[in-house]
Image (cartoon, rainbow, N blue to C red; front, side, top):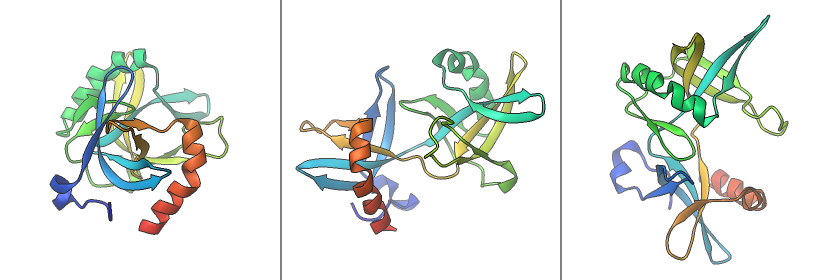
Amino acid sequence: MSSSPQSEDFDDAELVTLTDEAGRELPCFIERELELDSKTYLLLLPVNSPIEIFAWDEDDEITELVCVEEEEEISRIFADAHAVLAEQNLTLKRTAFTLSAIGELPPLDPTEVVTIEIDEDDDSLEPEEFQILARFYNEEQEYAICTPVDPLLFFGKADDEGSIALLSEEEAEQLQPMLEDMLLDEI
């Protein structure tokens, strides 16, 4: 596929659906395709806006955001997060591999952008920037609902039946240089 789809031609863009172990789905646009050794690799962009929920952790003098990853905690706070986003005409969904929001995000406000290190154990990862969309409290804990400033992309591969699966960590590491070259060639 050539360039990434523009908003006016999303109807013409090819869609695929990623499914996780829990059976949740994530519809994605195919941004790029790469044929390698008779296999088709795909760069995928979620149709709806990816959402992360962070908890404010105030420890004496340091205040930081900690990503909420436990399914139990997400289930406990989901109704509150859903209600807060509904006030902005956004619908929060439990989708595969990430929460997502349906609707038009507010314009990027630099005063609401935070930089967060998602994986403190991996020094090779760059910190990510997130736009805070809303804040809410649940059981005296403050949370922030955020969306990444940069697009969240997934790398997948198509099998012989046309099903799409995410690359394993080993496959992603092996293909990373080629996938990055593919991305840079399109810019």
